[in-house]
Length: 420
Image 1 (tube, rainbow, N blue to C red):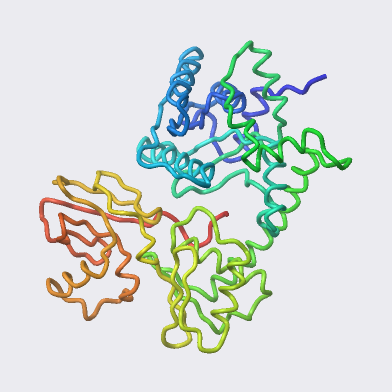
Image 2: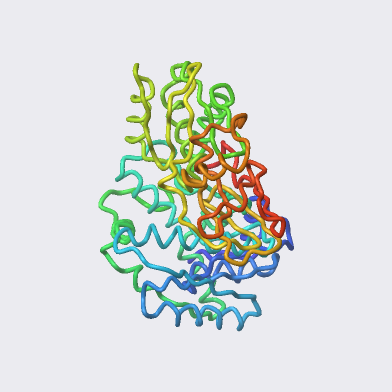
């Protein structure tokens, strides 16, 4: 008999993940079976709004977004289509599309005061993720697969279906006589995930099944939690982070814990300073560790984070200026460089956000007193500044504002230690 997931199952899973009953929840909806099942299953106990991203990578994407909205209307569920605008990549398409999808949905959640974003990743997805990461040489953190919850900078991502197989979700939809949209890319064997999916459907080794791989991921999650505990303790002793988005690392403590803990701490520092959603791969972290541990270390850049030796045995970790988000228009609410939340009131016409940069820094040196500035110059260059043309209007972190018609406030998007 085919297993069928129920409303009570999903409600219990959501509550276990920290989502209060009746609270607003955004659900990422492609219109496929998995996301449609989640939207319907969650809508009984939570205030669901479905978010469909029209990525524009296929001719049918706009039509599918309209179809997804029609499906939601049929069931009385709120729906919003978010469009990925701008140029599209020619390679690594799935990764770029995933990042753009999350950026759009998280920004919508922030703008609409929705604290939870739910996605329909299920047990089979988890198994595929474990095998993909195994093939790429991942360690404990990677083989732990997708976490049930994750902080996305003020929005909590929840994955309530990780313990349920795909067939249970489809059985639920069939029982309700619901139709769904089939994404042709799910059968495109140019993508590694599709190849893994085909392998799991007919495994070459007895026991290489989705349920066992998902169980393995849960065991690795326990190991990851233990490592994160000791990583946080080490970071508390060895590093100090600042609201301006930089950090100092005590080089004398690079051998004070097992190497695995140090490597994970360095990964968190990279992620914190760069604003990245993920962390560098292990082989790159190992090279960084070798570099900064060596005598005569002069500097290294990894993942958009710049490591620079300074006085008193400290290493300054600051944002690489060349890697910051390109200049963008200033709005009332802004997420900039995935590091800062910026709010603005007043005359925003013609104003843009960009890194202060060398040219902006030279302007400040003429316009205001900078000699007693506590923020290191290298970190100052990557701070968000408001420009009108080439002229600096505001640098909130430095309490500089040359335009009384405009008020700009800034806050950090994330803390140093967060779930990967």
